[in-house]
Amino acid sequence: QWFASAFWTLDIPASFFTAVYINDVLRFRLRDIALNYLKSWCVYDVLMLAGDVVVLVMSETDVQAGVLRVARTRRLFRLLRVFQTIRLWKVLQGFPSLQNQLTAMRARFGSLTQPVIILGLLMAFAVHVLGSLWFAAGDTPGGWVREENLHEESLGHQYIRSLEWSVSKLPPSALKSTVELNTAAERWLGIFGTCMALLSGSLFISILTNTMAEVARERTRTTKILQAVRRYCHTYSISYAYTRQMKRYVEREHRRNEIQSHMSLLQTLPEGMVRELFQEARSRTLHAHAFFKEMGLSDPGMELNLCSQAINELYYLAGDVIFDTTSKAEGMYQIAAGH
Image (cartoon, rainbow, N blue to C red; front, side, top):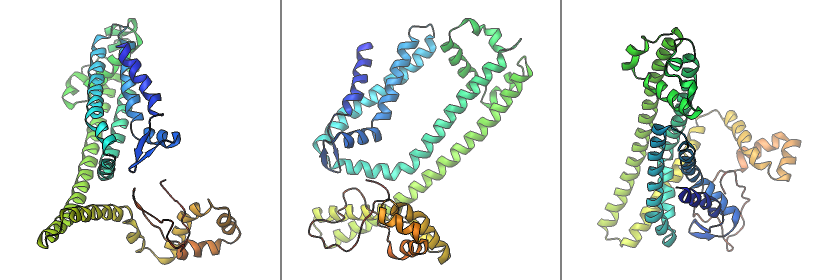
């Protein structure tokens, strides 16, 4: 146990010094390696290591039920990490171009995972607060804390037991036992918790359903376009290599259109409002250059015309070539987002 925990602990700092492929290019700069690790595996590694630490700490106490639950979760994380490391990471090392496919998948399902993760964290925090309230409400004469003599137990056992008690009182089927509690504070807290659980569950299902429906619609549109390309290539006996190239191009352009889809909606606003909106949004990027910052502060009218008439927003994906050494200079680029 201690050896495994030490291994994963040392794996975290070692990851900051291991070269990685970024956009099919092997990067050795420590800054690039650190940013890539922080955006990918870092949170996962810390969470997995936290499970090991909790198990090691709680194994010294008598909270056996909590130890077993955390241990099962830790083993699941470890099994998943080993599977991903052996079956995926080595493949990516040999074929770095597959990272672009994973990037596309993250872009496609990012709208689904982000709200689910946020709602999950909010629900976990709500359970933590509710468990604390249950302990406070039960720490009175006749309360459940006094009846179970939790004051004689360790802090870890008190916390886990409070979470178990609070979660057990959330389902509507537990209302019968809730109204039979000894104190009024416990009864009203149980009723309040059940009502909030029903409301939160309905909200979670609604958001998840709407997000999944949106993802399904986007996938359907992309699939129809790709099917049309395949039919055309099959009809005219286009080579397989060129068909794959066309497929990748269609996928990239579809993702690009999704990113800049808001531009068409902005054109429906009044012209004056659009001009002011562009100035508010684009002036922040311009002010990163000393010349444009000084011009904007001295002549806001010129900056307004510059932001609304002379500036275009361009959206690039990973791997796009913006310009090369043979390109003729026709304008000035400033990065508003990304790297």
